[in-house]
Image 1 (cartoon, rainbow, N blue to C red):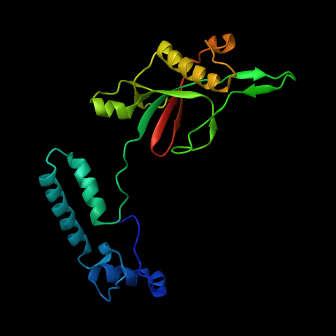
Image 2 (cartoon, rainbow, N blue to C red; image 1 turned 135 degrees about the vertical axis):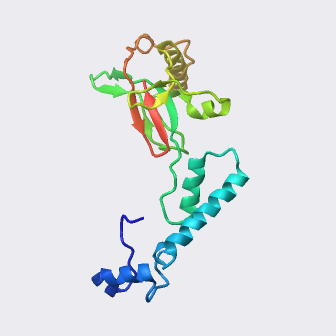
Image 3 (cartoon, rainbow, N blue to C red; image 1 turned 120 degrees about the horizontal axis):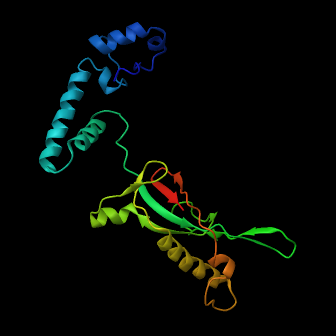
Length: 210
């Protein structure tokens, strides 16, 4: 409220902002398409509407956080941005594997994402999720350490990440092999570890990648 001035659709309102302000404050010559706050009693009606909504929501959900109730009630009473939901946190173990063809051309191992969901059908380096905050919420556990962007996620040790990634890579390579593999190729099994994570943030999920 107060960050901008709401005018009616008439060109006169845009040419004569003082007239539009007079309409909003004193209710002279009000327009049907003005926003709710521009009514002569707009501020008071919205204030009491929010108060009533908070009281009703508090009675219905006594364990809810007061800040959440206020944000939701304010959004329902007037056109403000809705409160943002916390992003889901996921920790991924990623493998970047390169080989060379007989012509000495570099080749990179890529896998195709599922046909549905985030980045559906796109290609990426092999990756396996070793932690998701969705499980933490289900189990009622607290998050632990901070990643490189300052977001709280638990630390998953290198051994655990490597084991999960080995199992996934064996599955991927076996699906392309003519005969089942008993283990990973030596070059894949002895890959170097990167000791610094990279964070990529989407609209609803944050990926911490090792």
